[in-house]
Length: 297
Image (cartoon, rainbow, N blue to C red; front, side, top):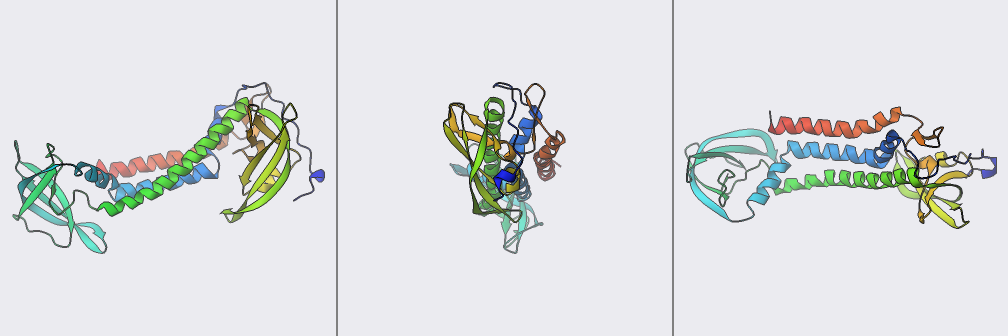
């Protein structure tokens, strides 16, 4: 740890009384910036792309529809063709069929691996009671892949978990930027963790500070860029006067914070707002395109 007495002193934050104005761009940087939410959007985006491509929504919908009572009807295979998909190195075949119910003749497509039934073959068709528009050949499935494909949900679920964690911490930081009371903290501990980001060790750095009544509180920040919190002494802190455990070191916030002339808070780099939104917007746009390609074209 650098000798803190050789570090330049941190200028106390001269802020307007709370609740103070906080730039919308700065709030967006807190919510969408930082490693956790950015990683989450990337993981969610890639996970959902594979979910669309492999027809996970169709598999989930089929499991739901056929969980209850079913009706059956006789049907006839009208065509069978190999698809470009495979399961355990076995080709997935699309089987077109027609069947009769009360009303007009209906058609459908089921999927199977192994053998492809010949056109004209008689099959038994099942459908949820009262819903013949959703059908499948008995022994086959109404989506290209079976329930095992649901494991793909793990990836978007992990991404969503990171996004929610980033949203929680970002909103907490935004609240402190608006309503927090400034203080100056001193580094009391710095411990390496087992986590690495971009090959760098993540450190847990704890800063102690005192509120306006002299009561001591502390805040622990986890970062893989400890130098950002060691470049001056003491460090500026914002805390909640109603609960000293809710606090944040200003230099650990995504982007740099600048104090405006009226004591409001603004992003030191407004252009970073566009950068932190690029990942989420790209994730949504690419998934919308893939979903359109899969189901609407």
